[in-house]
Length: 201
Image (cartoon, rainbow, N blue to C red; front, side):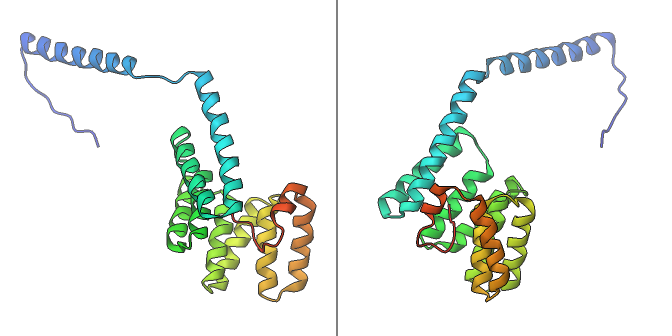
């Protein structure tokens, strides 16, 4: 709402008001021009470093020993500084929290990922995993189904959903989802899954 008022001012007072307004506008412009600006080359370099840090953090998460998890946390925090407020980093921090047996903290990170990007499918899938672990089967189904709708070609989402279906003894449906996941997984991803029921990275 804009509130307006009429004031009776003489020419001298009006001049003072206009002078003050002009000074304020000029000062604001000067301050803005003094603010550091990131050039295109720097933005590209930061994006590359961000992607590299995320890739290395995922590898560290898969190792999952204490030192690797510590390194993953440091890399993810740095990635957050380089490219702030991305769903990918919040989701990865949630996966890290799960590995540290901090499920409530993990849930907060996954929810933060969805605040940053409501369409980030893996955060939905990871919330489904937590709901499954905590015995909230209907909620888990809803999260997994949403993840599948958002990212039907994401093999990790499909694999986790297949694992969930097998856990519920829905073997026929689980097998169909597993076949879809296998058709999408790369050899490296298959190797990463060796001996694991779900993707959590």
